[in-house]
Length: 337
Ligand code: MG
Image 1 (cartoon, rainbow, N blue to C red):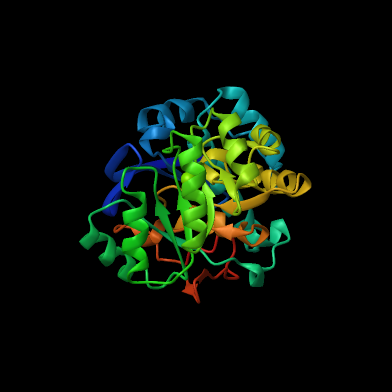
Image 2: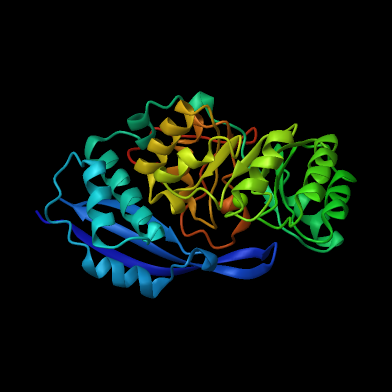
């Protein structure tokens, strides 16, 4: 039987307008994808956050080139990746949707949960943070309250009010914090001073302090920082991981950057080889991409998989969340019930 791809555009609504350094939005366009083979359906998802350069039109255009008739189970994911990269460069989000759907499909064919393909021990699942975006003091306090299930909060900094934001959060909770500067800091001396202050405030790690192309200043901060500094925007795919060595203590891997689960897994192997720390991150995503990332998260040091907490029309049931962690189930494929 032949393989069929079906797509459905979906507007994922955020609970609060999402604001990071230099930008804000209220929803995220998704392309939900189904790949069907012999009556079994694999689910995938592309989350097209605007700053990543993809949208429904570019995704459709890319998909119009994709012919999967040659594919045979068990899928060879190196071959799939090389085929998709051969069709066009870029487009990591829609490539991720195809890779995720094929993993879900493979799991359903084998009647096996996806996490088993990566030799993952679900007991090793790290705590996941929930992000508190920039906002007024009142809204921040409300967000902290709503993030009650998380044992770690992530705070978006990189603006004028960084210390005020942290102090506001610290006025109501002692939970450990992740900080994401999203390239927002412009002066390395000021940034380093802030890094030391943040350490005193119970911050465990800091993502992308300065511009993604400013390797020198990011490396300078990393060298002097008492807490791990991670590259996010600087590090997209497997070929970028080696560049992180000597510049960052670790990397933030996201399926929408890595073009899916297979390459994310390869990035994890490479990062471990280079002695780099790993945060498994996400974009605005449904349970589908969240479970795909959660299947790999036990191989990482930290997780920031908060999609279902920050959105209000997740088309799938929320995965189980217990003691601050996602729970991997034994259902075939990604585990979407
Ligand atoms: Mg980040």
